[in-house]
Image: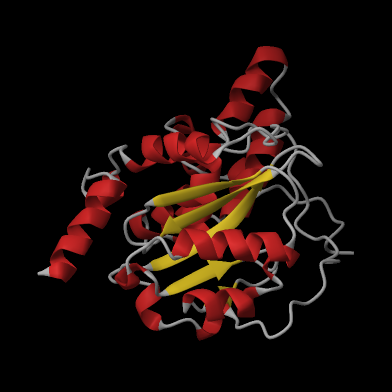
Length: 272
């Protein structure tokens, strides 16, 4: 009964917080970035802190409900998803369990601080139904991207073989671990590990932030390949061109080096 009782959201009752969130959204910050930075900016003031889910809901309740026409479209673009409706968090998990999974909680501690190169995050960027996919790999320390087309099916056997091909082109110092979600395409992870020597760690269900670098990269890739794209004619050369664009773009998180420079510096340091 308490859950059904209408209650105003925090952003609807706190003018200063609402204004700051609106300014940061306008500057292109995501709700999660805002939530994290508010905790740092106002460590001693809980009133100026808010979760990213509350920001999402607050935007819809405090902004979208008032927005109409072009205003509504403008406000929707402030959110990285571009949606004007919040997707519910709860949903049934009907993907089944992958045998012999090793959970992300068992991943080595060195992966977390990004100080050691060679730990990767991976996922599939899906096209329209029946129109292929793209394997996306991101190296956690450098944000270096590897891409490979899957123009046909993306079964566990096909994904395992293509991932093994991608990983074995790398120097051994860059083959330390791979983190993936619990998609059935990784059901043959044991075979992949035997072929490459790379252990696979699986995220918790519905926890994309546990592969944050990869999720961010997939968002960037959607600017080149929007949802519903047809990947059936996509080639390795096409993927290499897009990967080059991302790997040569300066990144603030790398001190304005680009991922290619960061990875090359790491390899040079290892060689010497």
